[in-house]
Length: 371
Image 1 (spheres, rainbow, N blue to C red):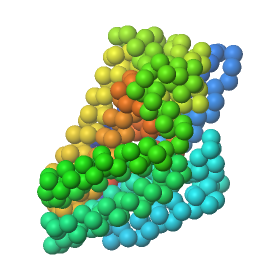
Image 2: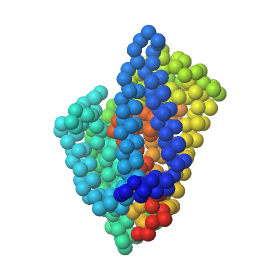
Image 3: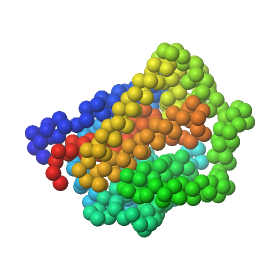
Image 4: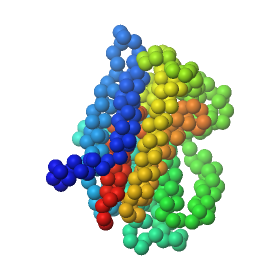
């Protein structure tokens, strides 16, 4: 691709998505710094510096995916899915354990979380399966094959254990099946089966996972243990008021009531709400709203079924993370450990989000291109 073609392709980008994603990344870095701040006398951890590095790499991947024809991804779908499954299996045997969970691998000295990339791999594989010419099967066979494709990563991720990330796969697949033309009746049956299997899932939960659910049902059950993070998060969000306490002035965060081990990651929204208040929260939600609208716009602009399903899958993944993360910080859902896209600290999640957004741009920039 020559320079003129690159300029033309970049000129066709969804620039609202560029602006919204850029604002979210910058705000994320600023509040990761704040989440690590204790006082002027004490050093700040290097989380924000590492997040800057991941953001720069992510922007490079974002631009690269924008320039790369998304249809070439379809040709590699099988290999991408297989590689993701291999990495998930390796995690079980040679993964790096943190707080009792094997979720990370060291690759060339860099710690990665394969489950974050497995979500994208599944999206690409499902989009490829339903996006083949004449493959929109309305019988049950296509649905069963799709469920098997999703079941393998679900099981491997749940065994890490990381039930929150595994559960994200369900709404992604359901949204893609709906757009692929699977009848609502069949989707309703799948939902009913999932509901009936909840007791089986409960019996297989770890003790800490059960405690999180019980604390959600009964907030006063264990306020100094399993319910601590939830309670402190709600206090932080509620105390922010209209305009917040001010940058680096969040008492729940700086005084350590909101644990510093989770404040830059799962509870970054709590730090934002406390220090920037309702106004800052509205800004963040508005930027995420633009990202969601851009995802829908890319899906509608797609010239083929693969592109449409790919955009739907990426948008569903981002929406699920946004909804669950914010809901858990304000007490509307149990604590699940899902990060907030583009804002929570974490390299693997930042890169997977930027690759996903790059795929949306790749689809959108080719809206006038003949197949």
